[in-house]
Amino acid sequence: MSEDSKFFLKDSDVPKQWYNLGADLKEPMSPPLNPGTKQPIGPDDLAPLFPMELIMQEVTQERYIDIPGPVLEAYSRWRSTPLVRARALEKALDTPARIYYKYEGASPSGSHKPNTALAQAFYNKEAGVKKIATETGAGQWGTALSYAGAVFGIEIKVFMVRVSYDQKPYRRAIIESYGGSVVASPSNETNSGRAILEKDPNSSGSLGIAISEAAEVAATNDDTKYALGSVLNHVLMHQSIIGQEALLQMEMANDYPDIVIGCTGGGSNFSGLCNPFLGKKFRGEQDVHAIAVEPSSCPSLTKGKYSYDFGDTLKSAPLLKMHTLGSDFMPSPTHVGGLRYHGMSPMLSHLVHNGHMEPRAYGQKECLEAGIQFARTEGIMPAPEATHAIKGAVDEALKCKAEGKSKAILFNLCGHGHFDMQAYMDYFSGNLAEDKFDTEAFEESMASIPAVN
Ligand SMILES: *Cc1c(COP(=O)(O)O)cnc(C)c1O
Image 1 (cartoon, protein in one colour):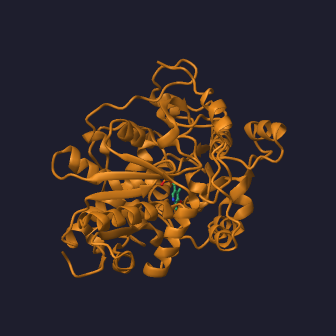
Image 2 (tube, rainbow, N blue to C red):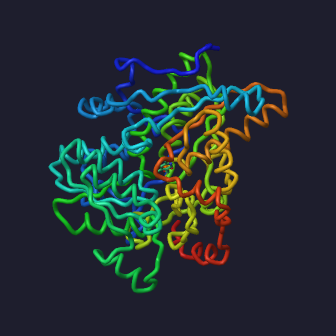
């Protein structure tokens, strides 16, 4: 075991390839289906939304994909991100466990999102695209894509979920500083937005609605494409730079994680860290236990159904086989904007369904408490989403203490919380809303899941 607490890679040692877990999966994944015909979709079905290179990455069976030079160059502004041994937290917990975190908040926009934003902006630029429309929940994705648009010279239009738009004015200012434009969703600018507003003028919005709006803008404008910040295979693959680095950094630490933990909204930051380790497991090289943590207010992995469902609220997107709460599900307006999605990445869902990953749900209060303990020991103010991973790691470390076992625990600290402090303010003023999970709305929404064989 290394005596050091921080592990960085030299620029020249930062991995130059993304890793695709698809190449090492034992069980085949179910393909996306056309929502009308219920037949598997082909590349042409996605062409109005994405450049062809990204569509091919969505279905590739290659294990490694070369990262293009301009993307590597953009990464080099902050990668590698630090791998840190959380010795102060270990001490506070009085645990024999060795806790490590990978700090993706060290990126320009403060989360893991630029890893894929830069890649997607690059491939769109190569394809001659002028403008990208997208959605954002917590604001991190809109921020990262706006930065990527600035780097590669593409106009960015962000539909921001209403509740975040109102809660996070500083996010809007960052998006605009990077050159993106942002509007609250549901908006009056699209048919899908207007339809929602007609039914509920005070709608707090959802990722599903914002996705519908952005995809509509892309589908109806020739020079405009759409970009998704999570869920899809190519996004997870771009995020694998996190785990590719962590493999090398754990080697520098002369250690290997028994447990890998992350929070899951659409599944991209956790898959990014976890998939290279799972690949080693599937290839019979080294075992690992993966734990995916979600909020109890939006528990797609722990309460949802593993079924084909729409990724958007308009029900026009391809059907994805995933853990879903139903595309009509409106999660209560909690502070974990990035985790308020009714569905989940098909690849991560596939792993949970086949028993390769343990899903777990926690309430936002207990997570914020773990986040505050982390801030008081390690010094970093975590994003509310990231506190779910911290809570998972703390629980595992306390389990080690109870059992007198020393395990290595690695979690993803996917972002800092500097622009998401309202969650902590509400916590300290005692105004944190209870986690609500509306069982009636949930059952109704589950009934909206289409029957597909
Ligand atoms: C977007 C985001 C998430 C949720 O998305 P994943 O695809 O599950 O990673 C979590 N944390 C932060 C900080 C985010 O920006």
